Image 1 (spheres, rainbow over the protein chains, first blue to last red):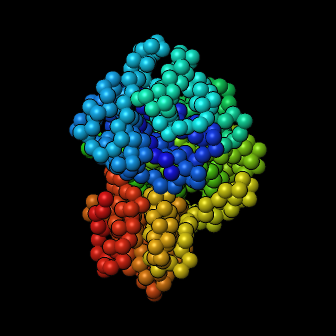
Image 2 (image 1 turned 45 degrees about the vertical axis):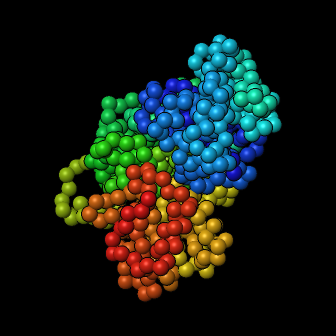
Image 3 (image 1 turned 45 degrees about the horizontal axis):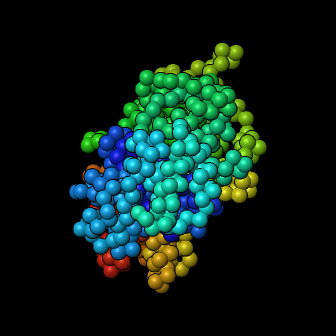
Length: 181
Length: 385
């Protein structure tokens, strides 16, 4: 089973990021279970999306204890929060930051990868909307093979700026899969 | 989503909306509340697109929504509504009335913590607190089961003339997206007969409902309700069996999972069931004779079946994601009462696990099993999680 926790702040699109990825794996024929938790629908408060992917039906209905991948939309979520609670030495923590990964080494014993999603999103005229870039990066980190499907799902799901979102996702994917995060 | 197939990636709530679309009820009084709102939102979208033709009534409160549902149902038409938590509690007075009026309304409830303090978390206390209102109650484990059970509920409710509540939990089911295989329109048309109740409010017929009655008439009416509730056990089993024959999916009114040769059974309801399945598989792999007993139909409580299934089992551990201060876990109370006086009755450990939506993992359940195996049970619910 592959387990992701994707956390952002209300309004950043973390919930949609989880759904996008779930849809890709679902369309590939995998079993998926994705849900979001939030403490009331308020902008600015932490919103987490939990995604499980497996080759057999997923029955357990509980929080992900030890995620394989953590996607962090905003480094401010790392301080004092519970996002990294279940991270192990095998966990990859993908952080949206212009800083190098070493800057986050003090957080714990796990693999930290950073990507400057804000700059990539701006380059593609997406303003502060970084979720499609981070979806691409997260999938790049696990060498997700179905790039055509990724483009298709992001394109179909984006409410506006379809080509920009697809391009940002692709750039995030390439940066991550080439190991240049 | 795959447009060319009936297998869609859906939230548990939207799986319910799709079932209601297939039933196409005549009247749907609605009032929004988190985490139920997506059910009614999608229904209104279907309606706006012309895919549903019933009347949607936007009400000023849940109490009014249920009052409208009763009145509409008494005219002899199909009625659906949905609610959660505080909304269900505001309906409480009308829930008794609906059952007394023998109005076979189908309502979906999404379990959510009750204030105060405020929360949005999965906890079954809201619907379990309605257990004496005369409504049939089904607890579902996932979106697929909620979709299918909503269809069954119309059939059962209309056959016995009692209202039915179908229930799943906040977030873990309501907002979890997973693959759901939808029933087809042809299947639902074949499954649900036309609804033609023997009595209805109709100026052409000239019947009424709600007169004052004598003590004996009142008592007889309650006994009739009790008899109807008793009939649900068989009617619900048959409705499930026939759905299985028609669409290939069935659940029973309860389920025994890996109970062959079990000497320790975990009893629970709702989303916890799925987590227990994983724990049971791991315990079995460790060589421990542990099984799961899932209660799906909670009202009427299947007392005779429970006694038969649990007789001779040394230990039962009940997991309650609900809490009644002063008595403890509600499924625990019900099971103890059902087993009273039974020869070879099991020892029962009642654990409060997941109250307020706290996280219960398969590993936590395994630990509870291992500690319960070496202990005498307390006479009271014990806090876990």
